[in-house]
Amino acid sequence: MITINGTGVPLPDDLRVTLLDLLRDGLNLSGTKKGCNQGACGACTVLVDGERVISCLALAVQYEGRSIVTIEGLGTAGSLHPLQQAFIDHDGFQCGYCTPGQICSAVGMMDEIRRGVPSHVTEDLASTTLTLSRDEARERMSGNLCRCGAHNGIIDAIFDARQEAAE
Amino acid sequence: MNLFTYARATSAADAASKFQPAAKFLGGGTNLVDLMRETIERPTALVDVTGLSSAIAEGPQGGLLIGAAARNTKVAEDTLVRTRYPALSRAIVSGASAQIRNMATVGGNLLQRTRCTYFYDDEGSSCNKRQPGQGCDAIDGFNRNHAVLGASSSCVAVHPSDMCVALAAFDAVVHIQRDGQELKIPFGDVHRLPGDRPDLDTTLHPADLIVAVELPPLSFSARSTYRKVRDRASYAFALVSVAAALDIKDGKIADVRLALGGVAHKPWRASKAEAMLRGGPATEDAFRAAAAAELADAEPLSHNGFKIELARRAIVAVLVELAGVEA
Image (tube, rainbow over all chains, first blue to last red; front, side, top):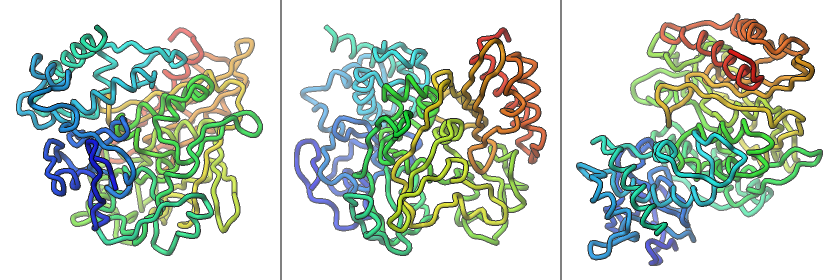
């Protein structure tokens, strides 16, 4: 069994099925997107036990017993996740195809910041207290491409949502 | 993707017992699953070893012992790694994306395969690494990302890892399980140059299981860093990278560790440069001379000649930074 958005589902019979294809084709959870299918674009980003991963390079069977959250598990049309609302408020997308991956990735990133995980642009490695600068956010979100080029809006949305969470 | 069986190992001995011919040990899968989808790797059995040790602990003689199943993020964020071996933390966070670093294991990182596009192009290209004897389309092809050191007439691919460059600089020791015994292999002996067998990335046997990577104690390891030069600011493989540690006493270089990424079929330990630097002055001129000596045997291909000067300059820039001298 594998837990998807709080519900236990059986593993696929075919061991070759990726976590991404299980979500989209097996469970009709089509919010998670298939972009490059080779780990380069981040459109398929989901959360596994709270950590962001790309589901296209993950065989579903590897995640037996784990808890997966997709964009469908973060918010609903009637009750948006703060990041979903912030993406709308700040034009964090045009076509929207990369957006579910961007939002799942940003949720995972916030937790990494809280944990003090360093990034390529972190100057002081010894310090475990991090401040989320715009450079830090850009670097940490570099695994999620936006072909429409909405990256400035995405960074604005992340900062807005973080502000709201802090208040 | 071909059909395969899947089993989870609960211990190194259990992993060995579950291994069979044409099996592969599976870490995070970020490279292996991709290669399986492209039918470049066709294992008939996967033995998932992510449940084995991922602990990061004090090593036997000081230093650190990192379980092979540790995810890249876990190593990069570890307090002991970032304070004692900062070049390793910096190398890891300059590689891949945050998502991939959350998945990828240390053992898997060592065994990842080249991203040479001809290696990946099963249907359209010749590649001696993929199919021994087939030829190499990279040598006269688009070889901007390829090797300038240690290549052969069979293969000019580069090793893609950032983490491994830092491990090479720190003289890491790879603990493997072979035939029920635990062996310790110096990091520099794990990966190999292509020669006429580019299909072999490493000296390890197919059934060898990497169980841990040991970082030996090094008095000046805290004075270390990693610099990566790439085509964009983030999430790209290295054109050239440098891992270095520097020990300066009384204005002289008491000791130094230097390794290069993006230039060879294996993480390239810059032993010639190290030998020239030891005991000499910590000046930019000395760094320049050492960098020139290391790259003296470099051979450019049609599109990657820039890497030679880039590597020289990157070495000098990193040593200048570590020495704190005026550039």
